[in-house]
Amino acid sequence: VMWEDVIGEPDGIRSPECAWRLSAHCFRLSRGCCYIFLSILIAPIVGLLLGFTFACLSFQ
Image 1: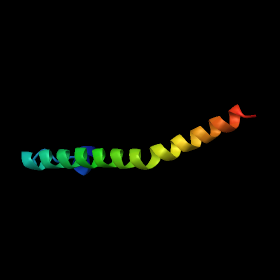
Image 2: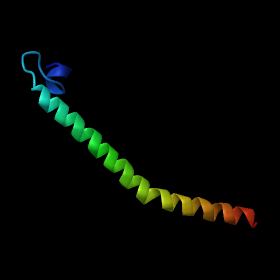
Image 3: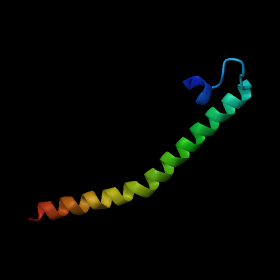
Image 4: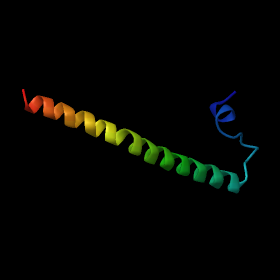
């Protein structure tokens, strides 16, 4: 058993091109949505924590 047989496609079998395009489109869409969601969720929290840390350090 070769790596390509388990992870990729065997030499004799090939998926239709539309399946490759659809999977690439779904990957790009989900990656973009995850990036936007995590940016909206995490950026304000990190900003507040860093601002609080800077304020505590500057008043010592």
